[in-house]
Length: 377
Image (cartoon, rainbow, N blue to C red; front, side, top):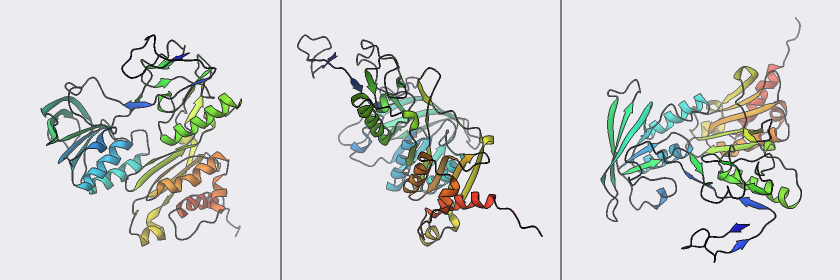
């Protein structure tokens, strides 16, 4: 049974409608993570991706907490508009991603005027001027910085916009999941099996950002919804672990990756796929500085495509692309992984000329060439 709490009423109100079901779906989504350890942050007029686009004025200065996808997309966009943007990061950009990609993207954003501070711990946010209809708020961010080139470890930054981009947390508390015997992690979300069913109540399914250990992406949520419809209503056996999931950061250049990010543990719980041991992989790389389309458009001098295969095989397990239109290019590799097309098959596929997508074929040709043997003299 689901109790529907209408606006202005409380849980348990006798007038609340009761819905009876055989199958149910939890799709409560997620929200931006707001740390509780920073003094003054909760009271400050900070911004997240939920209200950033409601700004009526362009901030003169923006401080961004975080160095992930949303942080970098918005940092570059506002720097292009003319805002002075400073990104605060604990370690490096894209801490779980490709290091070379992080360096290329950092350089690209720095050319746009974005400043990066690494090794940062934010200690306090002070509201110097509250928000009003006439002017943006003013805040002071106090921090320590362990970056080697920093002249002072302790410093303060003033800004009219403080953007929190520190990831997302699941909306799973205070929605009655305990009463339905639906187990969940308070930050990660509902614990599900390979069929998107609750681990503790198989009549309840979950999709999207409220689910633990799955990529928090719009297209991931859409695909999970298809799984639930098929499995719950039509006795399907569609597995989340079969997903090959691309992800794209829409900076300039774009950053795109693809892999199989979901696996299942010995108890049937969906968990993130363990990171591959680099020693067990072969990497094939094509740089776009020699790609004729990139040359014609005077773009992508530092861009590349990397395809990773299981050691001594052509079996593709992952791909990283830094390039214009990387989000378009990555789909070819997604299809290859999904349907077991090896890197030789990708290399033998004729690609239109001149296109940036030829770089994917270039990785395939590298693999083919690596198997050549020389004629005996």
